[in-house]
Length: 252
View 1 (cartoon, rainbow, N blue to C red):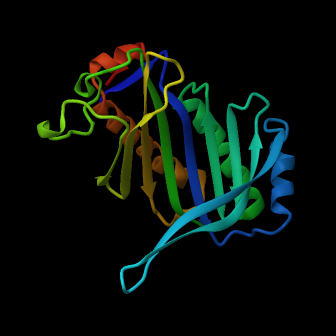
View 2: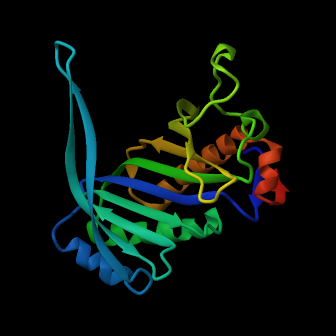
């Protein structure tokens, strides 16, 4: 791994890991049993409806848009609203919300949830593991030169002017590490305060291992995904932006 920096004010607003299982013993009792196991730490229980936008093209080239309703998920949330577990058909998602302490702390919750799911649903394999980090970057200025803060940013022809408004940039980096694909989305966001600018950096690592659904098999996948994301994040920003996050220490 390359340089690993820690910050006193990390920009992470959400980190999550999705585990998609195969051949689990899922039935109508799973949600209730799971909640009984986690309710002391995750007392809030709420359903979530999931909808997915779909676009279809006919042979004549005409496009039809629609929304498909996906199977609902059940969410289990801490009293402080800082962590969440989501349970769906053959799916387990563990979310770390603000305040984000560290990967090591979030990792403990992740594997504890996996162990509980294994005990109850007995999945045979994991088909896909996805790790995602969403960063919200606030710059205390009403206008910035993108290259001063970011190494990844949209560039426009000089003939179109020297400034631009809202934007979204999405790039896929296949096989930065064997078996892992990384999708990076960078875009503008609405600022919460006047005289500031806000941006979202979204890193999504996807691995399809088809491995046993055990902690020993999942842990190296999650840690590799985390390293992949951290390296991409550090490569996306400049030292000037790092100062806003208040670097704490530096390790190699």
